[in-house]
Length: 268
Figure (cartoon, rainbow, N blue to C red):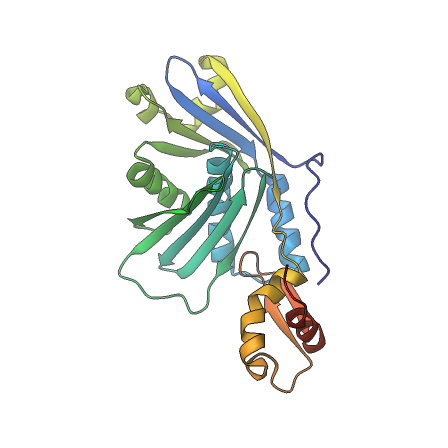
């Protein structure tokens, strides 16, 4: 698979708009996700990845929640979610870089560990700081409900997701002194009408794109320790191997000759 080029920040992408709801002390993030869904499916096709229909529907809802969450967070954050479901037995992985406005992820449906409960893992790195991990248990098979549980127990504030159209969604989150009666009484219809019913202050317009950034060199960095210690474990008698990116599932073909040259070159 050819090396992936970084996204051009001037290119069009999914626009996520955030507003502060004055007098209610809440924030709303809203977007129509059709373009991001198309990019996701183009990626599946290019990587020759087949996802079960049930898992695909779950991943798209997780992608919605994740992208809206990222757009609500500081720009110097990198975020990763791993959402473990026991029924169906599947892991959904998503990761995003708020500085570049990119998201990616994949479905893991093989060798998923059996656990007593569903588990939501959130990892965050801000700037050059250390990684912070939150772990929350939840029930059910809806990624959006899992994200709301994560907000309540880890973020210590309320978050509600709403589907406003076939592919349009919104996230409303509590801020200090939020009008909780108003917040808890929100419906999709009320959220859709916020611009006419409430006083909104524009916060940001962010562009979100599907992009991983995996390439041959990064895959060879993953394989290098094993190649140095026991190349036969990697290649056996084969002249090449196929490895999938752990972040997005893209296929990369690595030749023995390329790996031998890679581990022989001193790293600066």
